[in-house]
Length: 147
Image (tube, rainbow, N blue to C red; front, side, top):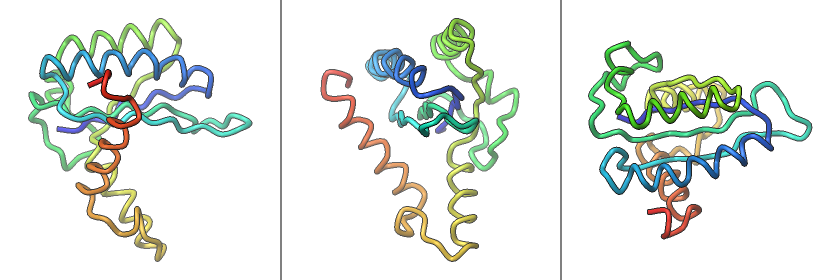
């Protein structure tokens, strides 16, 4: 299951957290905790409340319902402790909140919203193709040493 961890913060903090996560994602991938990842900045100049670092992880051991954005307690409990503990430390240590969201459902909702306005979301690509493209982009951006 793909889970989106939303970390609202300004550009400077996003860069700091990005460095921390890029190394952890590589480590988690090597031990099989993560199969794919999407790590993206979302900021404006000047900063706005919606600025946020997106850390989206495909966790093969998490079997929760992917059709919902709001994750159940059972699904959250399935997140490997190495990942949840790191997220907790990073959030608390940097005074940043962290919200976990069902990523597939979130992308499907955003895609529908675009389509209702008569706009194409990622040129009308299917959700799985959008995720594949984004995860390949992250893999490429982080470089071969990260994976």
